[in-house]
Length: 359
Image 1 (tube, rainbow, N blue to C red):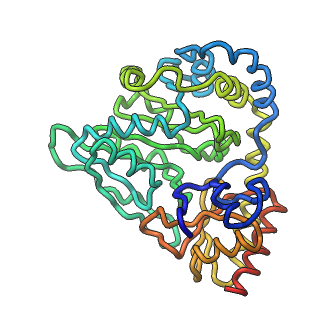
Image 2: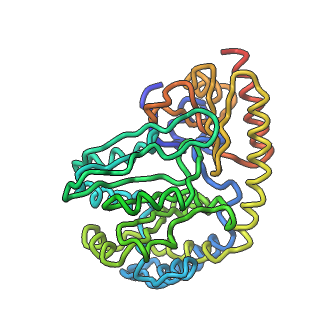
C-alpha cells in the first residue's frame, strides 16, 4: 500500500483504501481513550470560544498552575506545549548536545526523527521480545566523556506496553548526563499502579518528564502536552520556540480535563475489564500472540503478514489496525491495537477471524 503512514490515526489514508468516508472507519491504530473527550473539556471549549479574538497568555499561568497543583509542584517546573510532540523536539535538541543518546528499541519512530534533526549520535539497545518481564537493556555509562550520555526512555513502553519501576530508573539518573522519560501513556495506570518519576525532578536536575494530555482525554486534534523539569532548562526551551504554541481552546480543555476526577476513574474502571477481555479473545485465536502490557493498547504477534491483514480489515471490514513497520525490529509480523469499547473490541475479534480465513 503506497504512502503507508508511520503514525496511527491516519483516517484519510485508511478511508481511501476502504472506499468509505473517514468517519466510517473504526480506528484501532491510534491509542486514544474511546470514552472521551470528557464533557467537562467540551464545555470548557465552548466557553473558551469568546476568547478567540485575544492572544493566549504567553506564560500559560492558569494551565501551568493547574498542572503543577496536580503534581504538587511549583508552576515554574511546568512547560505546556503544542502536544508532547513539540516538547519532544526541544528535548531531543537538548539530548543531541551529549556525546551519545541511548534508546531501548523498538522505539517510537519520532524519537530518531527528532534526534537526527539535531545531529545526535544514537545508541540502540534491543529490548527482549520474549514473554515475561524484561529489564532495561541499556548499559550504565562508564565513560568519562565530558559531554556525558543522554537517555530517551518511553514508560510505559510503546509498542510493548511494558512498565519500568522508579527503582529500575534511579541507577540511570545517577549515571546519565540527561534523561528524558516520555510518560505519554502513564495516565492510563491508576494511582496505586503508576510509576511516574515526576516526583523526582526536584532531586535530579538531569531529569525531564514529558506528558501528553491528548491520549487519555481523547483530544489529539487539540495538540496539548507538557514537560516537567528544572526551571532553568524550561526557560532555555522557551527561548527556542515560537510564541503562543498552545491555543486558548486547548488551554481551556486542559484545565477542565485535569480536574475531572470522575472521568479519570471511569477510564481506569473501563480499561481494566475491556483490556482483559480483548487480550483473552486474541489469545484464544490461532495465529495470534498478544503481549500483556500496562497501557491502553496491545502488541500482537501474528503468524500472517500484518500488512495483508491490515489491508483485508480495511477493505472488507472498515477497521484500521496499526502495522509495526515503523518499528524496524518488529517488521511485518506484529501489529498494535488500541483497547476500545467492548462491542468494538468484539467486532475487531470477529473481523480478524474472517480475514485470517481468507488470507
